[in-house]
Length: 149
Image 1 (cartoon, one colour):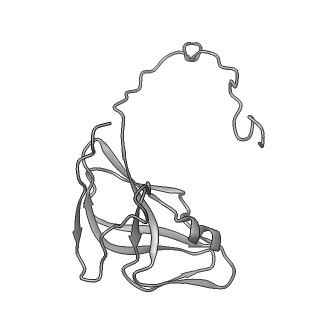
Image 2 (cartoon, one colour; image 1 turned 30 degrees about the vertical axis):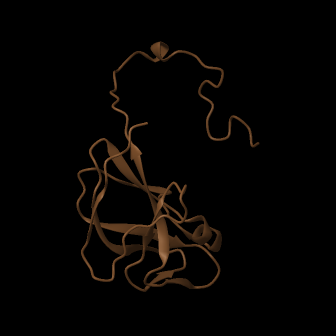
């Protein structure tokens, strides 16, 4: 697999931190909170990173939850956030607190999410009649149709 081009990162605040990897083979780069922010119970808050990025054309940035925070109850309500190659605004991480207690205090410098850079295949859509989609063993079964385990 060819090596991906570098992702340009601009730190627009002196306290912002560059993304880091937790280990050599980690899939994602850790993103850090720029400031202390309280997340109320069942409330969603956009956490600042102080970073702007230029994702290479042909790639996307995926913002994913950190499992350690998710196990406490700090989740990403949209599961995965997408950063497009033409976006140049500040990176925010949208989080919701569903854990115990009235709120969760995110501390400045705390790792709050992971950023993955993934290639996007060039695809197109063509309209066809339903029959042209073909049949599969699964068919139209969805939402648990393949069983629980």
